[in-house]
Image (cartoon, rainbow, N blue to C red; front, top):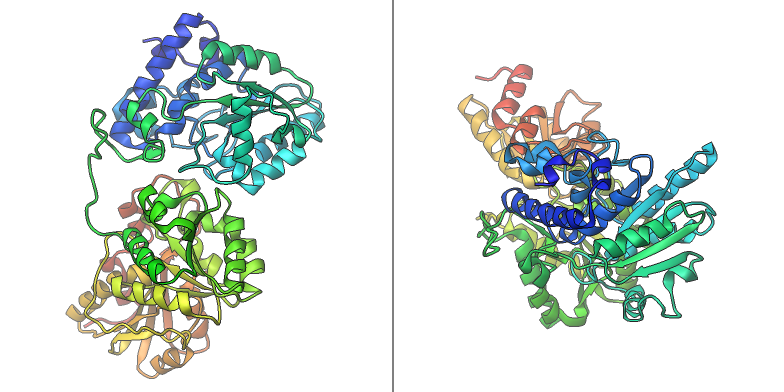
Length: 586
């Protein structure tokens, strides 16, 4: 295979046009094989094969710097920049990350996993180049879906003032993760229909030069276009029309399903390890749909990621105008929810834990200062969900629980979650965030309240003495296991379900001082600034000791959840061992 001899972009430059086309075939074949075994981003990478080959044929990476937005389309780039073994050999599939990673190669310049960033990051490289008096091309690669993010539009707006070499390649495959949403996509459509000659041009309106390439999967057309803009002395947008999922028929036909996939059978597309149990994501969507039929003021909002809470195309159609996709724009989603709530609507914004941080300012300023009663569902918040450094779901508890007026809840089971969700939708006093449990739904026989208006009242599930376990949300089952182990050693611990992440039940905690020597907190997230520290601070002036368990503050990457939990002593036997080191166990 030609690809086996590609050790760096310089090897690409020596190939004939015929060989370049064969290289594209080989790259696609290897991509599909690896993705079927390993999982990863399918459609974006398959659609960018020719453009990546052409970029490395024309430009001189790493002297010329290519910055990929989101990194969803960077796999072919990795294959051409010395990392082919991670795509040829199954034993080395995990040698590279699924995202841009400078520690792997000089051809990567930033760790990038969130969207709409490449224009700003690459613009910074261009400005830094100019300040130093250096030369070279700076290329930002961004998908059309990512253009809906505010940072992308801010970057475009600023780019026109650079007055030096800056090349922005817009990969237009007519899709975000799901379909695109927003007025700018009408302009992209008109530009495609008119071969780039439409008089209304978003990019020219921002002061940028512009060329359009209709055959965005044709290597010769791309090479010609990139040669035209190489070493240009001003910012320019190269708008290329590509096919998402190209080369894999199933991915071409169902672009949303194949944006990302777990391991699958290539022939049928069926998942190799399907998860058949009911999940909280599934439960949320079906429950909200039922509620929408009874209440036309209720609406669900997503920021370009409907799939993370099972809003399938069929369900979106069923919800109609009560389902709102704002595109990849978490900031707008939060402010929009605040406005809808102010107008008397009942907005529910569902967002991945890793992405909620993108809207921190809006959560604080647009929502919570105004105290508007929107519901925020924080999905996948856990140390055991996504493990790529760019997508960690560790930090939502410190971020959200310290914003005034926001009530942040942590349900522990199916019944409690639905009760909290129903209550939050009708609650009018404050905005409410719910840390949706992860994994398969778990039911309880405990009586679950339906009203949470008396804020910060914890639930005592079992009353004991000496040791109290405050087991938050996902870690309630861990708390149960710790209590059972303590029983075998002669201690009947108090087990508490805190329910409220954002507040402290001072009266309950004060009552523990009488007959408890140790309080243990368990939270499925980052420890620094989190729930446990609030509890430890409360007991600081007392004789009660505290042990707080969560993850240490770090950007962990591609870890084994089991090993990561053990490294942070988030294992029942380890916790009991630590308790024994502080207290004599009988």
